[in-house]
Length: 254
Image 1 (cartoon, rainbow, N blue to C red):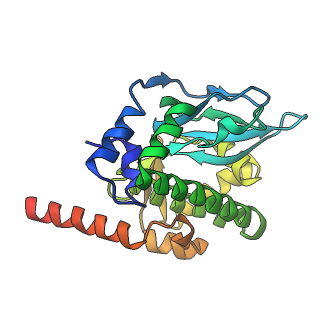
Image 2 (image 1 turned 90 degrees about the vertical axis):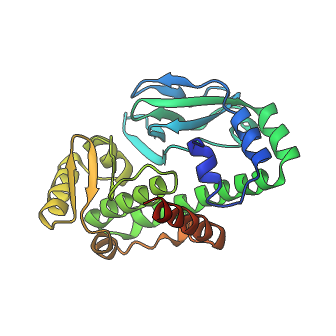
Image 3 (image 1 turned 30 degrees about the horizontal axis):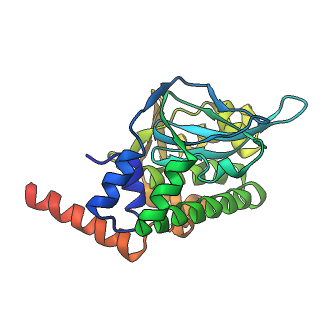
């Protein structure tokens, strides 16, 4: 079975066996990192690209008064920042939210694979473009949506992103975020987050048990927050063809 990075990249580009072998060579050594551990802190000098193979991490900054703002979630298959080694020093921190499987990829390895595998390079470009699109959508989320819509929107986004790498089952997925994590992401208080989660449950839209979120009615939740997945760029022709082939394979094997 291909790891999460390959699954993610194949959402954007059709990869050859040679491409997949080269990507496998990027992850010869995986390290286990516990929850709530910084992978790199603001002010440190970046040397490697961090790849999340399993688990959840985030990009964040801490203000002088101790207030934290989370600016991105990293899910299985995500680079924490593909070009981070260009920086003289980090202007933000990256930390785990749950226990994670992390791969530290040297710059030379990134340079080598992009020089030799044009389809992988195009897929990397897609990743960077989608990261920027997600950031734009998060800005819209914070600036234009009501608090309850913000939280519902991020639930829909995570569903789509995890589904692309095979981490969703029956509209359920791991949701390791605390109320404080959500508050620090959405610019809300813990009390407001608690009230919104309760409202979403009472409306019959979601359940949250033992750190597993189940979306009971995906279409209703999307309508509730005005979710449009176009910014994730998953429904391009290549992605549709791959999902269709997967569906046909399951049907034939049934």
